[in-house]
Image 1: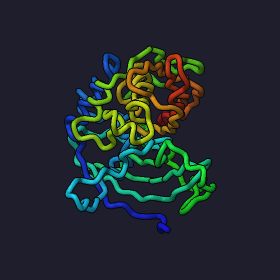
Image 2: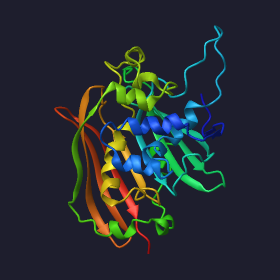
Image 3: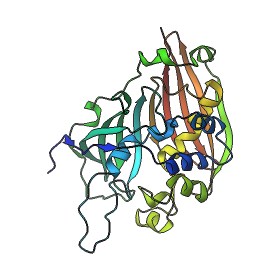
Length: 307
């Protein structure tokens, strides 16, 4: 039995240049706001979605007896939910550090999940992201498993919230006040190809199910699937195109759930719908649908406004 919480070994950045540029290339012909943000020297918000995964995948691993390097802690696993807050922009070359802990595991309906939380700080010690991550060990259910949990129950695990103080630094606050309830952003049909997934994965993938057909099959998938942050990037792009490239980098809070895999060759339509406009916030429902298929991702976004 594992003792929880289990502290993880801190991991340091920066993001590799090929990782940042690969994520840009992974947008295909879509993604003008993302490209402009990176050109301005900032890491795109979809990469910050994966700070906990960066922590897990870079934990020390004992070498295998045959000398082969063991797979990363995320290899073969499936990302199902991410709750996080971006507290401030992160420069592309910043030497960040992420710390965190595994808070528990639980089994439901024959599937086993893990929860991990993390805090990421920039090179001067300022927090730029807080994350709470839920992962699925395998798509293949084990019907012999009974519902159970070890460690902190997911409903008892504190989740990141909007950073109201950080909202004061948002250069697009004025534009955000023009949002109207019911306004729908995005809606563009975009193909997600294996080439786009491979570009985002780079030559050193943390989880090769996104770009290697054989590894995808080993994980119980028919074909490689786009990573969770890759799918989310298209919904975030819609918001940035409308409300500014830094609109998501000053206290915004996100809650994503991935509902169905986005296989290579799929076409998706990502939308962001304004659901609330108040003096201190703008809220959105995010959705990524597979054309001629189910919904791949749903989520909520709250952007705090300065008071």
